[in-house]
Length: 322
Image (cartoon, rainbow, N blue to C red):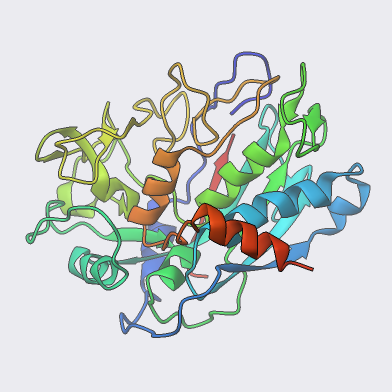
């Protein structure tokens, strides 16, 4: 998303293909981990830049983190660095509200399919590889959630950073303020990309099996039974394209292909976000994350919720910009 009343993003920066292929040489072994289910957790590293962030920045970012930790139960820790005016030590690019970068690995379709099945992820994946043998890329955080062994599981999984010149609201109780951007919503957007909510499609790639694909792209359909392999107008579906849950952005020049197209509904996962409005994470967003292998926490019954309240006392890197 670009900073401004009408938000549009230029195309995201990617590593050269050769660098991504080199990254694949150190790809995962493919064996699965086992462990009891509990809350997804984050280990945060605050970049030195955050020392100059305004009051409310850290607390608002923690609110965004809390959403993921209370919504998903995968027993893994995501190592995440946070920047103010920078992402991973690099200055936020002009016009970007926020950016993310993250470790990325690749494997084959069948390994991903089996891992998603083992994670009880909702969504239909055909028995035969619909990509024609493409490498399926995923963030290292997503690989952890799917149970893949990583060579360096304690290394940094990703970084997020935010424009230090934008007008933000950090107040969790007043997220819609005139002319201000909802920081919590933008932070939830950026964190989700580190967790694996992104497209790897390259519309200029026409060489079939050599073209990139992400886990999210396995749910990207143009018609029932027809997977989008080029990054065109498509929608998110968990039943092989029979039902559209939301519409993906189909123009790489306007924003990330893994984001939703901007329609009438304001959504934190849209490719362009307005100021002056709260940016919620929708039910469709939660379904999307669940299809990547993030286990949704059970929603307690009203009586249970009351009782709970009473008792409370690298392989490769990809960079995105909003």
